[in-house]
Amino acid sequence: MSTALAVAAATEAIRRLLEEWLAGADIDAAVGGGHATVSAVPPDQLTLSGTGAKLGLNVFLHRLSLNQGWRNVELPSYDANGTKTANPPLAVDLHFMLSAYGAGQLHPEKLLGHGMEALHQHPVLTREQLAALLPTDLAAAGLATQVELLRIAPESITGEEASRLWSALQAKYRPSFYYSASVVLIETPAPVRSALPVLVRGGRLPGGAEAGVAVAADLRPRFPTLVALQPAAGQQVVEAGGTVTVTGELLAGTSRIVHLVDQRRAVVVEVDVGAGANAQVLSFGVPATLPVGTYDVTVEVRPDPTSPASTTNRLPLVVAPHIVTAFPIAVTRDAGGDVTLSIACSPGVFPDQQVSLILGTREVPARPHPAPATTSLQFVVRDAPAGSHLTRLRVDGIDSAVVDRAVSPPVFLDRRVVIS
Image 1 (cartoon, rainbow, N blue to C red):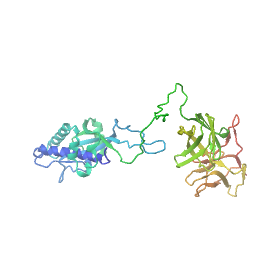
Image 2 (cartoon, rainbow, N blue to C red):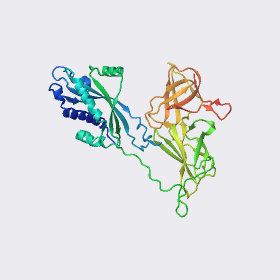
Image 3 (cartoon, rainbow, N blue to C red):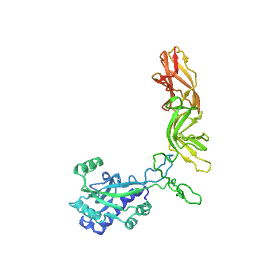
Image 4 (cartoon, rainbow, N blue to C red):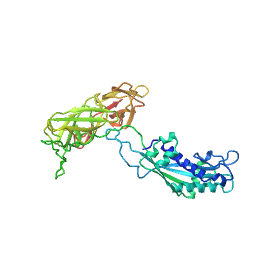
């Protein structure tokens, strides 16, 4: 694969190819004895007349595009834990504009014809050609050693597209032709996590033979599987310190460990629920100090002491905040009509978490809480409305429970702030 310098290396290789072709064709005699050169600069930086006027060809890289054949190779490059598992190449096609410059009559046309002939005769730049064309600093880009050869092909664009391109360049139009160079593969040589080779399928049988792949003629899972997570009291979220019932298949075992992982905050917690004979249901308690957030839940099950442990699929679990202060909370407005509320919560919130109190339909942000794992929050309600307001605490968009879902139909819990 190539490095990030490969784009510059491809441009320089084409420029040097054209330069050598013009030298071999003795083009200087055909343009009145002037010395024709090949440059690779933006057209608006070239001088068209007077001293230093450009005579020769200019190669300008005006656009890059993703190569359609390589764009989905080796994806995804990260596993579910966010660990990098591959370095997929950035595969790009280069789009060039070949322009001719010269003040004499028919000089641009002669130069452009030779340039087009050179690229027509070299539709593929071989590894040997690239090694010979590139200087030492760009040869290190690895363009000559990438798995794909560099192919040069003419591109057909309409007059309207060419007009828009030259207008965007804010340069005077010159006789031009357009090419694409494909493909440049850019890869970062960063280390990745590599899987170990498979030694045995399905474990070892007595005598040393492998058990092989387990095949069953029904739809039941062959490995521990989670189907649903149900917080207590029919709630959709669980509060820290609450209980969650897990339903699934093949959950019985002599050892069962629940893993809760918050990828955002890099929190990993294990809850050992011990042995159990029920293969469809198990329950675990959420640690009281577990921060508010969304967690990936898996269960590691060991069917018996001699069997290897198996890990289930992942299911999401939302851990919500809980207002510890007893309800109802009665407060009185001050002379300015404002109210200051002091709310105790569990678990503690962190300084970077967004915290607010919802009074009915009004959201009141918390005052700054710089201490880690803060369990005491302050809220200032400006021009507080009198009355009884249903209240919930919101942390990073997750609300504390406010509906009693254990009854049918559901009703609001009596969690109110009374402002007088």
